[in-house]
Amino acid sequence: MDYRKSLEQAVIYIEANLREDIRVEEVARAAGYSYYHLNRQFYSLLGETMGSYIKKRRLADGAKRLLYTDERIIDIAIDSGFESSEAFSRAFKAVYRVSPQLYRINRLDAYVGAKERLDQGLLQHLIFNVTVHPKIVTMPEIKVAGIRGETTLSDIKLRDLWINANSMRCHIPNLVKGGRGFGICEACNENTLYTMNDFVLFTEVAGFEVDSFEDLPSQFVKKVLPAGKCAVFTHRGSLRMLPQTFEYIWGTWFLETEEELDLREDFELYDNRFLGYDHPDSEVKKGIIMFTKQSLKQNLKEMGIQPHDTLLVHSSMKAIGEVEGGADTVLDAFMEYLSEGLLILPTHTWFSMSEYHNVYDSRIEPACVGILPNLFMKRKGVLRSLHPTHSLAVYGKDSEAFIEGEENRITPCQPGGSYDRLKERDGKILLLGVGHERNTFIHCVEEHLDVPDRLTKESTYFKIVMPDNRIKPCFMHRHENSVTDHISENYKKLEQAFYDRDAAVKTSFGNADCILCYAKAIYEVTKDVLSHQINCLIELETIPMEWWQKE
Image (cartoon, rainbow, N blue to C red):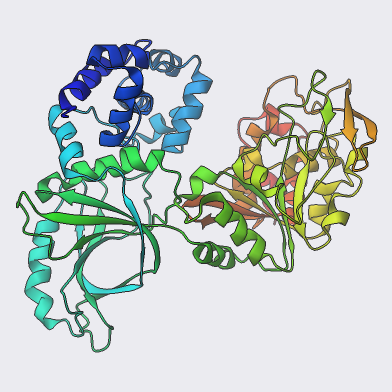
């Protein structure tokens, strides 16, 4: 059955009511089908659910309005179907990796998340010319020799590049029989997917598979596609529509998939199914390399993390990208790499624990800080501390000693507690896809320095379930500030100070932007800054540079 007409009707209804309160059941009625049936076809043929399409189109519409109008963010948020600017900001940042405010300041119409309206031509292209659900395949290491050219997304010069590459092919030694061609999109040093747009210049290598690079003339570029898992899409028809295929991959599939991707270099594969630039039956494969456990362990090594280190990880799984095996592979990589050290993940429960829900059982209480901690704390050999609001899960050397006595704490990060022990052990803190607003160790520094207006005056009564099932009473002073609901949001003001004093360095893990911090140095820099004005993180918009600079 041809569902194109029904899908067109659904899209027309959505676009006509994009700034209204759309219910997917109403969309289905407008298209003449039940919600269940239409949603199933929407996902099968277009690669996403109706609800996902509506949300992405609203965010993309909001992004355009941020760039090209002076409307208030709260007005854009409400028009886009969000109850508040905070809800809009959270959803926006999950897609564009920056807040709406910063997106507007940057004035950069980003490629990822640029969800265009599904017109009739694009609808037909997705149904007939793209495999919206890619195949996940294992590929060997592939060597490619070719030539490099520059282009932009708005002015793709791939045809000219391939004409030149084909004319020079006869000068490439050690060609593999079968003649497969590869177009490799090289990573931009200054740009990532989240800063790419139609006008950013990037490089592409057009080349051919070779057995070795021996005797390769100097005018050719050497490229190696690593062995491992790969997500493969098929593009059919003219290459003039290749940008529309890219738009689907990065604007829809990339934002939906649960796979973890290595987004350094993707590629197009041209084999005997490629029949010419404008041939209607031509096929090109688009490959996106996935991270493996070994590649993630290599990331840790390249950061300078040692197998014997004590490492605390605050994480965003979504930020890492496509990983073969998902979150479990990420945990395997950390646990295997730190074979002689101590791995720590926060398993905080401050969001759920309260005077109304005051029984803390470390064996069953879920963490409020993401998927990795919740999976990690259930693994064999992992211990979880008995702190009712700021527990930690630990694995490795001295794990019992590291979390000892947490049931006796009366504040979230009390001096002498587990967070304080990071400094004593010369520990490191990896902010994986998150910033210093998630760096709980800075709370510990503030408690050490007795910064005022950080804790509740009254304590909350908790009941801690001990390993032998006894109930231990606990009276906990919680984080609170009279000026802001989120104290830690102000920790970002220290970021440049940490970089300048070598207390932190920028790095990456998978596709996630990361910050690797050194606990002792973080403590010293924060102490130096706060010595000038104890509450400066709340009271000042920016911190004077001279407060952290050493003579």
